[in-house]
Length: 242
Image (tube, rainbow, N blue to C red; front, top):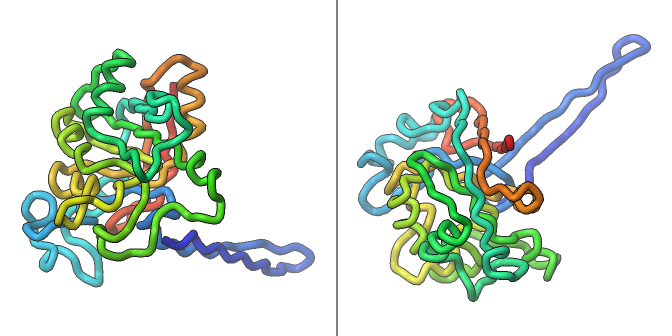
């Protein structure tokens, strides 16, 4: 939930000198753009591939599904699914979550056919939502998912990810809360259920505008996580190429 820490210090060297930085970041949550590794979430049964989190997750790091396995980068076709444009509204709201059937409707209307391994960029208008009330931050402190409240993607998007064999979900708004079901995770369940990488808190507004200008919804997506051995994820700076 916290923004990245950044401290700088200058050091004299003769008549010159140099500067150095310290970065500290808790990247999970709603503050920083990051990618979730396959060891990040689980349910009451298991992690991805049936692994036991009690055995795989330790203070020293994860022994399975950790982010260093993506250190050589993820490069695939990306597809923009612009929900506000489809609805004709500025943004998704708490009362109007994004459903799986709506994502299918966007594909049909835009004439897009997803291929196995594609990444989808689901734009919900987070910046526009925040502009309506700048003093109200997106998301809430951690607590029972049945009590928190925020706009985002409904749990019904899970079958969409499975049926289209999506490899990466890039989104600006995250799981819609409250979930509405007695389960620990909504769309974040795609990690342990389907082995889908999630790239959270992406700044998609500029990309959505370029897609409109270029009259294109498809592009090359490049994600290069840090090589954090045993890490549950990594800060990320996703790039697209038209």
